[in-house]
Image (cartoon, rainbow, N blue to C red; front, side, top):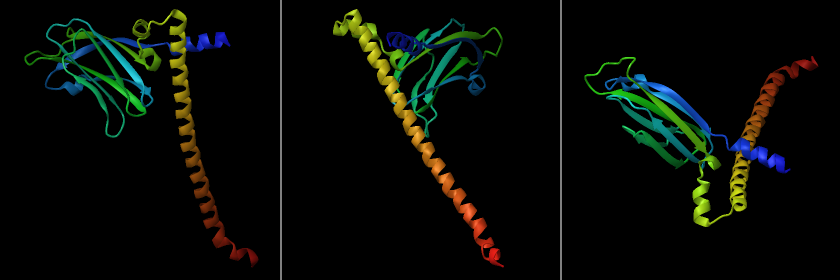
Length: 200
């Protein structure tokens, strides 16, 4: 049982990180240079996005974080982010969270392969986003108490995920029930006209 909990906590603690070069585009056409990364996140989940931007002469990197709800919830929209930028937020709906970047050149500069900046993005979701070291200092928790707090957070996430899957399964079951009703209606429509001719 203990090994299962350790394995589970190790799997949940994995973080999503990516590093890439972002080519600069002219400020007149920013839509040509937008690059987005997405991750599915459930409602009311803590998300921590940490961005490190490499150096670049006369380049401005903008960031926008939003979800795919109708209308979209915009969690962050910031121009000219500094070399290191952190943003924590709670999601308002189930769905894909998109983190979009664009690297812009000022007027008078033309696009060139030399103009690019390295972006390093680290996204922590749920228990990964909680700063347990700060909690341990504030609440004066011992090592064992801290581990229990981490496990409690992970278990709450698992319970919330199971409840989400249960709601989703109920919606799908309702859809399947409606499909069966439509099928039965179609069969009865096809059989009813043929029924009087079966006695001839």
